[in-house]
Image 1: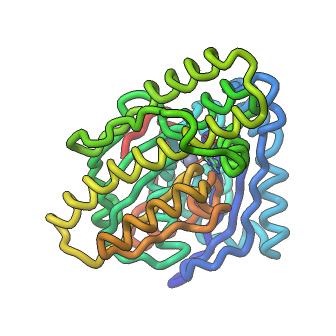
Image 2: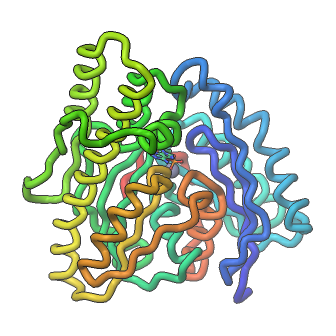
Length: 339
Ligand code: KG4
Ligand code: ZN
């Protein structure tokens, strides 16, 4: 059909999610069950716990999505599930479930690349036309990508060590915060003075579009150690300085990418940000200013669609379905799957 109804499934990390989306981009259900509480005592995602939690929760989450949308399995035109990259146990659970539904209903199955799902979210939320420049910033990824068309992604830069969300999480841990630390660090930064501590601004001024965050994290550790027992204000000030350094670094690398992108595609296209770290307000403001200076539209999907969800997976499936693509039930989950 012209506007297929697609069930999306996301299980690649620590969210068990299911969503129902149609070809017009209408989201009828978007259920996200976070496993944060299961992993918090360990300060990070434990793969074996994640796999078992997906197994326990995926079916009820899918049932809930169908109920929210007031549809049944018989109304589905296709099923799309994250096929990687991600933790293999969770990806297996999502993949097997999606294949079983597709087989039982005789409908197409799509194995979606999680990164492609993040990359295409702006087309679901804002109908952004190709080409556009994408900054993908999440717990596992930090990349600048020229999105030239469906399946046509050119990586302009990537991180040479930690992903930016990982840097937020590790720094937050150093500051005594819980997991995941990004949102808590942002809240602390709002009460802090970003000028008090001098932190390095990684890669700023260097040519190219690659990222690096491990040096910044080390610098934070040294400040914390030097303080001995940091008080609440110390922590807020370090958090503010860290957030400022990250924003400066991301904007600097993005500016280089904007230049390369404009040489190839001209002006008037969009700068899109995606991934969990795109929830950060300081970062959004800094990128929005860069886009304005560069004559680009700035597009940031709503926060609930920036962090991991299944609506983006369903949408990527819809885009591929429309291009005439389907996947074989032989598809094998891919723990690593570069765009
Ligand atoms: O995209 P996502 O939900 O999962 C991955 O695919 O990684 O991103 C999660 C990451 C975590 O590292 C989390 O700390 C970070 O996004 N994050 C933030 C904020 N909200 C989430 N980082 C900075 N500021 C935030 N407000
Ligand atoms: Zn993600």
